[in-house]
Each structure stands twice: as structure tokens, then as C-alpha cells.
Image (tube, rainbow over all chains, first blue to last red):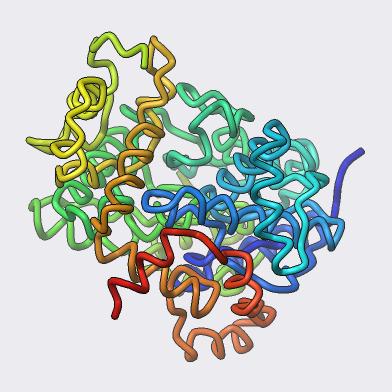
Length: 299
Length: 143
């Protein structure tokens, strides 16, 4: 049965830094008939704390799952890190009774219990599996024919495969399929599945920026007019740092970084201002002009 | 650990490409040899981006990224906790969110047509985390 209602789990980075992602995702999901309920209360998915305390991560993730179980709804997230963490902990607790008991002893202190009755999915998985490419194509009223873009999946939507598992980490197809559904062309480029570098910001900025630069160079080589992301952190990494990388390494890119729902929204005929294009730091006016002029795309 | 030191993890590691010091294979080797202090005190331990490429590609099914996470957890137990994690942990305990989201940003949601941000149930979070040794450690450090 196709599910059409989800509990929206925003996570921390989306409301903190990238409202354009949330605005465009809500518009697009509404347009596709996906209903959203809001999380009744909130705590971080746990991922940021995993490096220093695995136990804290497990409890935080299980809390969120227990809250969703109370609401009786599967979780949808915009952040691959949140989706990956909730998926992973869900699976771990379902498969390991001893661990489950241990974590539940913590949750019981707050009157909660993990039972393992809901699922957690990233918006990409919902679009592919529950909405389906067919329904998305039907919703496209303004195909973005002629627009050439490059996808950036990021790490946590793909790996570790054992826990995420809906796409091939070595040759991911979901985002490509969803981009092609808008009528745009999704270009292949070198090292597509490589990390954006964001997790290294704050630990070693130079490494992080070099990684991002490499990606931008590879996208530029194939002539990408825009980069499409589905992760808050990847988006921040590129959109916030592109100009800095240009200055630092004497490069020129001019590649706007779009959240996938912004691209899909354009194809669905939603106006750019309603998709929060004004929140992007790298100027996207060139491609908007190309896409929006007389409702047609000029290659 | 079934690691036979083939080096797939290091050669596929995005961080190792740009770092002169970070080598996941070396970290795994140190762990195998039981060089506890050397590996736990090493700065390079904190460079892993947790992209899980090494885990997915290891021909011996060593969960390299998870081993590194375990080592980091052990280092944290000894009190070696980089500032960024301290800040995130305290923010979660005080707000539910890993980052302190400015009030302006929360208020702006309304003008952007977004629903109010769900509030963190801080009391409930604290109750759930009762007895977690990591947090005791944090408090000790803060005093």
C-alpha cells in the first residue's frame, strides 16, 4: 500500500541553516499529495554525538522512534544523517533484544518505550518508493528540458549499505532518476559518490575545502549548470563555500547549488520565489532565467 | 579483527587523499597491536568524516568506520573530547537540538510560512539519558 502520511522529522541542521530546503520540500510534497504531521516534541537524532558516545546516540535515536510510534506514523526526514541514524538504530534494536532492553530501560525513565513499529525514510526514498517516479512525472507540467545538472548524493544516503540499502553506494540511481523525471539532464562525472567534506569542517577546514573543490572541478569539467543536493550539510558545504573556494584556489565555477525539491518544484510549475531561491548564496538567476522564460527551456 | 592490511580503506578514503597524516589502515593496525595510548591520543583519530566508504569496500568485512568510532568513544571516556562535540552535547541537553537555533530564526519561520519548530522536551531527554557515563564526564569537565 502506498503510504501518504508521514511524521516530519526536521533534525537540527535544516531549521538552523537551510530553510530553503524545508520550504521547497513542503511545497513539493504537498503538490504530490503527501501529507505531513509535525513531530510533537523533538530531540537531535543522535548522529552528531556518536563519535564521542555511542550510547547517547542510541538513546536519542530510540527516543525519536518511540515518539513516532506513539503518533503511529513513519518518519520522513530531509537530512540523510537523521534518516540513516534512525534506520540504523531501528534495525539494531529490532535485531538485538538485549540492546533493546537496555535502551528501553533508559526510555522508561521518561515514560517512553521502543517497540519497533515504525520506519524512518529520507525524502528521496519516499519519492522513489512511495510516491514513485510515475506520479512525479505526471506532476511535471514544465519539463526542464535542456538544463544540465550534476547530482551530489552525499555519504549517509548511501552508506553503510547494510543499514541504508535502498540504493547502490557504488552507482546510485535514485537521485538521477528523480532528476531525469523533471526533464533535466543528469550528467555523469568523476568521483560522484565522494564525500563533500562537511564533516571535517571545524576539525580540518583545509581538507574539507579541498574535497569540495575537487567535486566542483569535476562538475565543471562536464559542464554542469547546477549542482543538486539532498542533504543539509552537503548543501551548506557547497553553497556557503563555493565563493570562498573560488578565491582560495583561484577557480571560477558559478555553479548554483539547488536542493532537489527546488528543482522538482520548478518542473511542477511552482514559482521560484515560493521555492526560496532567494536564500541561495550562489546566484541561480541564470538557470532560473533559462527555465522560466516563456515557460520553456532554451539549451 | 580480520584486517590483513591490504590498504583498501586508506586508498579509498577521501580524507587520506588530502591529509598527510590520516591513514585508516594505520589506525586499525595500531588497534590490532594494542597500542592503546598511541591510538587514543592521536589527533588523526578525529579526522575521519564517517563517510563509511572504507566499511563498504573492505574485502575482509572490517567495519573500519565503526572501529574508529569505538576508538573515539574510548578516547572520549578518557576526557579527550574535541570542543565541537562538547558544544553539541550541551546544546542537546539544553534545547534538544545539536545547535543553538537563534530566536530570530525560529520567529522567522512564521513569515516564511513554516509551522512552528517543535520544542525539545529537555526534562524528558535528561531523564532518558540518566546514568550515561559520557554525560557525567562532561559535567566534570565543565566545572
